[in-house]
Length: 116
Image 1 (cartoon, helix red, strand yellow):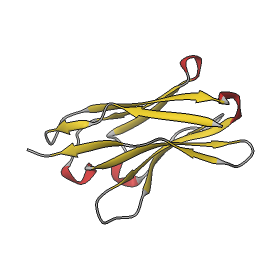
Image 2 (cartoon, one colour):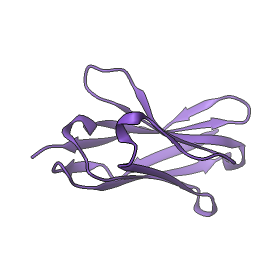
Image 3 (cartoon, rainbow, N blue to C red):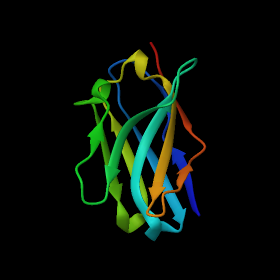
Image 4 (cartoon, helix red, strand yellow):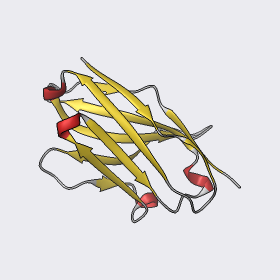
């Protein structure tokens, strides 16, 4: 099992920045890929960015050039640096991992609100 805890969400003005963190614990060695998802009110959950062992990060088109996903394996952390935030980035952001065995694990989510 893998346990995930997100932090770093909050209220920010358009054009501002936030950094989300995801702390992983448990069966860390089983993690193959990590990702950030988000779900806005009334919308389906969507993948924002993924980072897979041995591959370059991938981003949904709407955040390319603004968001950066990174992983600190030594400290079992994953981050999402979000710059130039827009109101349409408002959502609950979730940390997700996929293990080598194919199971998925989720954090509880952290709210990001972009508003003036």
